[in-house]
Image (cartoon, rainbow, N blue to C red; front, top):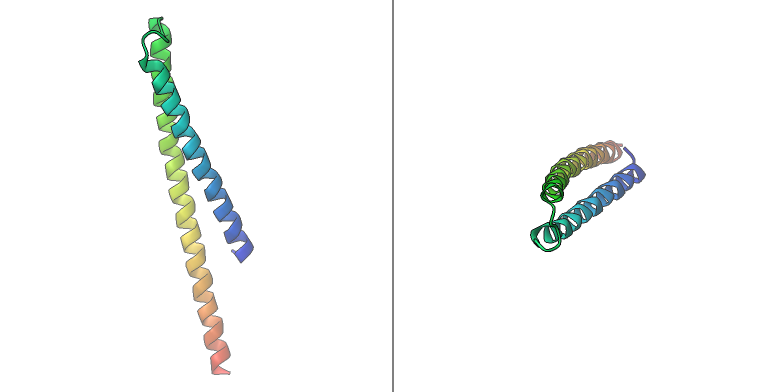
Amino acid sequence: MTGVGLNKLLDISSDVADVLCSLLKIHKNLRRLSLYDEEVLEFEAHKALQESRRGLMATHESAVEVFKNLQKAYDAEKELMEFEGQLKKQDYDEE
């Protein structure tokens, strides 16, 4: 991967981090709404809100895994790039 590719990978990771923050914010707001009994009177609505919160947390956990995998890909590509740079420097020093 080129340096430009690494930067694009960082941008994608940043986008995923933004999604993670948004999911937590939405979960917090939904939780706050569902905990006030006067706001949600219908049992089925309350149950649906709980399911929504669980779904958001499952999505958050999946997004965390995506973020970790993007970081692994970045680290692997960066390490290879640095190794290739060292090889080129060795070749140059030997000449």
